Length: 358
Image (cartoon, rainbow, N blue to C red; front, side):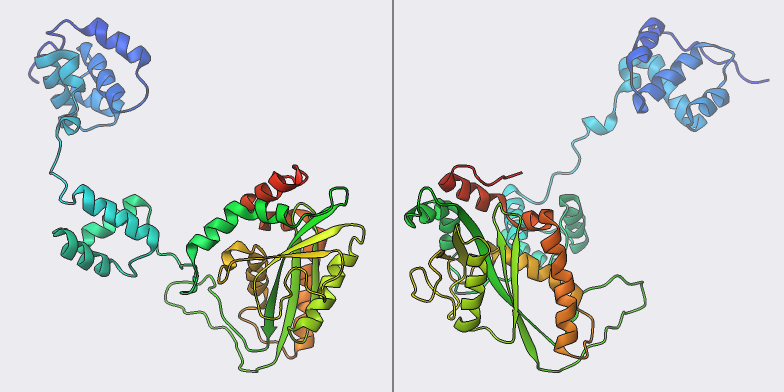
């Protein structure tokens, strides 16, 4: 014959348990309260209560013992919350250095990070612990955006802040429409290149390529707020072909003044050059700052269509390029997706909110 169970509500807190159950959300605390409430009925033995709340019989016994000794407070006490655990072996300076280094992309491998932190801060963490910390911080291996070693980052920041001033300095006619464009060129050719593809573990994908040195070029310009784009395919880049492209942009709206934002390539014309159409003005980007030119993003997407493929001729490749670019002429939303808000906001500050940001 089984031993008779001791009375559970020795502390007389059954009403408190019932009241807490009415408001307690689902979770570990509610499970404990429910187990105790079921235990108040002597008909429910430990096995029945354990089955009802989904815990082991031994766990139910521990909860009952805690309630008998200290009531609801002892029942709901979370020992983990009261245990501060082992002191962190990584001090605040080392944690800050880790965060700054991850933002800068300072380390290629975790052993490199471990060596630097051990040398500079004397941390004794194992490499496996560093992997764990990286996972909790949401860190991932990322491909860094290349930056030319001659770039002056301060100039790039200043350009973002002072574009409005540069636009105003052009002294554009007050009553004439103004169209803003960003311009760039891309080289394409038969020399194949590869990019990442999806694959399965244990199987390395293979992409066909060839080493044929024949090249062509695409001139491209996207309009800020116009949701328009202009392109020109040519066999080379020089001032003659670029002059044709300037005129193509100017002729797209002869009544307007077209302001072109472009980099300082040697064949690019500067503002006021006699070779520019009368309705075209120029603003030059800081040197070695492709991140300021949103057309670079368009070229990156185009290269996704050209990679991992072999083309029999430049003409065949141009046909694909023209077909791909047609989607930009047909879908203004794609053009808008290229333009960063800082560029639109600076333009609006100069031209009175004529360009939508959203």
